[in-house]
Figure 1 (cartoon, rainbow, N blue to C red):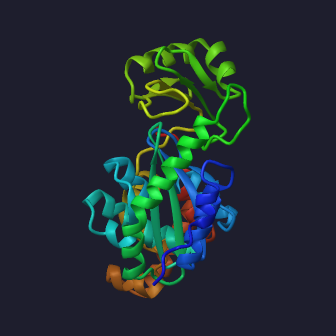
Figure 2 (tube, rainbow, N blue to C red; figure 1 turned 90 degrees about the vertical axis):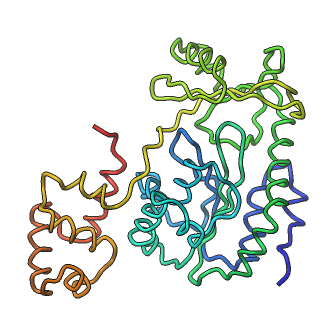
Figure 3 (cartoon, rainbow, N blue to C red; figure 1 turned 30 degrees about the horizontal axis):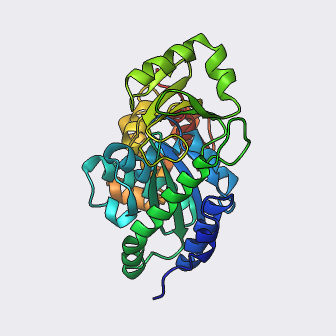
Length: 341
């Protein structure tokens, strides 16, 4: 098996189009059916950079709350581990990660029509990571995973070099590609605290909002710790001596995306959603329905007849004022996407 052709991403390193070129090179190698690039954040809802072949309804569902079941996101947030992750490797992780994995594989992944998924997670400054994800209708092979694992240090170095080059070329007020979501503002300062670059919205947000200005000062005194500023988060992080634009300086982010809620397993979410509306048996049936189990399998799992399951389903739908499994799924998404009480 030959290695992916990385000629185009190498050519575009530090220039617009790098991430797409890298994604496409790896996607061709893997013969992926669906792929994209997500930015993970420890403090905010994930952000899609590239999602050309991801259906809009999947993106909406993910950002509405399904990310809370994403085992790759949970694993990265809780362990900080980057590199190649697969569904098979997550099955060997901690109990909490396995709970997220089971919920994700049972309830969400089947709706994509895909059988397997892998993630190449590359670390990024500011408490972020970029996830190059690939889904396929056929499982990925051990040989493919082994080759990507061997190749990851090279991919990571290439990704890191691209970020360094992009940021090193920035000039104050320049409207260049930064590699961060448009909703996030950021400021780069040199080792003396002199601004080296501020994106277009930084001065408006940080200079004219007293709460944000105070949060920025607090964040600078505690690098790496997010500070709330209303609906936003402020994070300050030191830059190393090799950072060309501001050696030994610092970068401060104003993250204006919604805060990421805690990860969930399906059973917990259903208990929260239906604790005052359905019985324990009805809630259990909802869980099996959302896992795509047909009536006969639900009956076998619970030790009841198929007719009884059908009666329970009718009663559940009547109580919830819905008529389809899709509406039940949307209720779940609406619940997990809502702020906690």
